[in-house]
Amino acid sequence: MKDILEGRLEWEKSARGMTVRVPARGGSAFALFGPMIGFWLVLSSLPYSALLGANSADDGKSQIMWIVVGGFGVSFGILLAWLAWAFTSDTLLTLDETQFKVQRRILGIELVTNSYPTTDVHNFKYIEPGKFWLGKKETDVRTSKIEFQVKSKIHLIGQGVTESEAKVLIEQMLVVFKFPEYLAVPSTPFQQ
Image: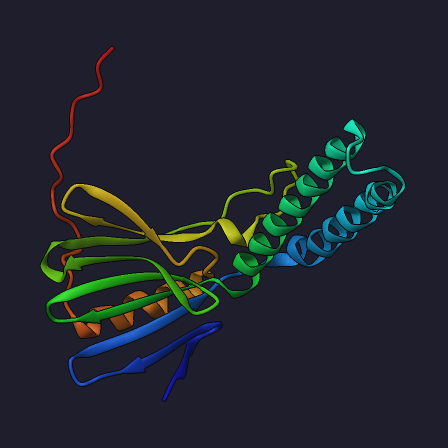
């Protein structure tokens, strides 16, 4: 049975650990621009599809029209994939004493899974959201994330989490396994 951990985060406790679902944060841009682009693609392809019936099959213009209509069809397919990613993508975090697994899914279909030994994972920290790309003074919550390290490599999870969601998630993860707060990572001195 899934319970709400904090905000949008759903979690389920198991005998050896926990599973947390972090849904995508679409934002108002997806709700506005997605249907608008789809509407534009359909309307802009209608004149070309109407012209196809007027031309004969051996006409050279007919082949070019089919290429244009096909381009619009591919663009519409890309739009649908983008909307599916924006509205249905999520990250599933599974943690127990031996491994930390990060699954990225769209429409419930697993796309990428990364598994790390729990003893190699460290340095969890919340990265605050950046500014909107238009340069406004408001922050874009979709750019916030949780950063962690596996050995010396940095990884990101939970894009779009709020500070309170990140705090509760990290605290709950520390209940399951006591991750080291800091491990020295060999670094190359900055050369001039």
